[in-house]
Length: 504
Figure 1 (cartoon, rainbow, N blue to C red):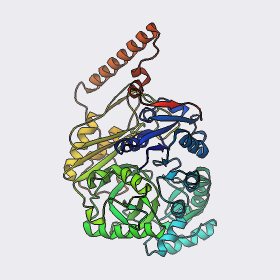
Figure 2 (figure 1 turned 90 degrees about the vertical axis):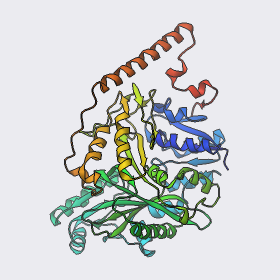
Figure 3 (figure 1 turned 30 degrees about the vertical axis):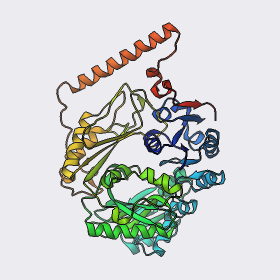
Figure 4 (figure 1 turned 90 degrees about the horizontal axis):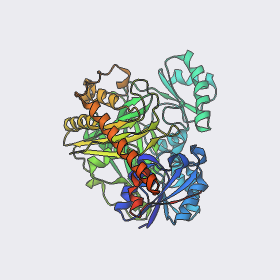
């Protein structure tokens, strides 16, 4: 097993990975940009290296700087989390060439599944069903019109290298195809440096369901249930749950076997996710494979009693999977709400300095947070600040616990989208488990009135915390001792843990 691992990420996923590393007796190393110098993930590590200024392209995306940070700190392996360089085959290869262990799938698997068209061709050869459409790029708008006629409207035009809804357009008729192809190509070129697009048949009443797969280097490959990810806004996930209320055991088995076939087709090793589009008629089609840990992996962990990060580390160290398909039996139900620093009505980002943070607790509650009361949410990065998860013996209990947990959540100094989640959890279609990706296109119930005095209590708590912190700073300045640990945010450093290596 490794003694030291560098986490090439930031925010909640970096903190979450570091917790498992500590559980395994592994020393975690952080990287950070100048904007993240005092971030929670930096304060959660034993060692931390600055890799550049605020802009991601000059810090978190600098491959050589990240690898150099691993070398300087004596790390033996790199865990990429999700986002940034996690699905970059070039980076994975550079890590291996540097003599380090890449805690992720082989670069060849990342390449095979990173391009959606290549992925479609790869899994089709393995007998995996894909949405009717093209398997080669479409550059001529007139060719696109002809293909759309053949597969039938509506159609989806998608970027081959896309993700997060970028370079994606739904088209209802021939008149819209020509303009949509050009628009999607421009958007894809700007977002991914690749303007190739393809066409797919639009599946009516679609559910977005994904299957967690896991493979080792010894020939073992399993599926670990499904996650329902249909609560989306502009093709970006907002809330996920497991198991899906739409999927029965027989369908779970069929989809799982297909996902395993897709993973084997590209020589996969490690944790991965196969995403499927499921029609109202329960026909399912492979969409893509995410060659990394998913944002929503906690709901799978809660339902199956696993630590997927631990399994990633052990498999990367050469161990076989610690579980078999027969061991993987779902228990209870879990829900995850993504807490974003954004306005729940306008969806505009809300960066800023946090003045008070209070996360929920109690039975069945898990919080994966990337911020605390000493944090700043920069404008430069993804607005996800935490993932709030609940588990219950059944779906109804998981929903009730999530409502309670949202009511106990207090994040002051910025605006968050908790009100949106509260409305989703009261939507009759969501409560009934009868919803698809169109849920957020319909009016949601209004937010319930908060209990009397709740806002005042939170503001008083925040003011008291600020007063105490200011008094500590003033006292430290008067004695020449500098800022106290509370002001700097690192009690761990005060107790001899958390050495920061400057430069990079």
